[in-house]
Length: 134
Figure 1 (cartoon, rainbow, N blue to C red):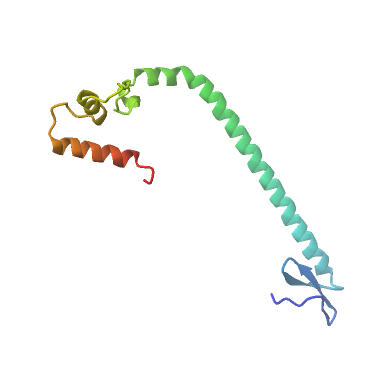
Figure 2 (figure 1 turned 90 degrees about the horizontal axis):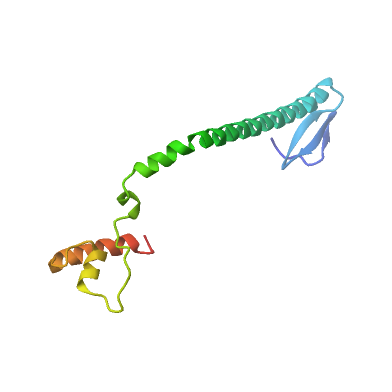
């Protein structure tokens, strides 16, 4: 629709509507109908939004109640899982003042007698996993 500003042309008033201009009949009964249809559309949108929010609230409430009933079962499932699933496979021990070969091998996840290639590969893997720019 072209933007006509505040023009009045041949019995038709141009009313500003947002950024553009909407032509509304001046003396025609349809002009009232157009205004009512816009108000009706807005009211139905508000009702639809309200019903959606209410439905989301009821669904959230139902989910929270269902989770309360499922809590003992969820705890049992987590307790039955192996502990290594949550440990991440890294060394959780304390550190000596000076790192020993055994401690370094535990951190890298290789044997203390591993060759330089295996140590280098393990170091590269850990550095890639823990790099801040990944």
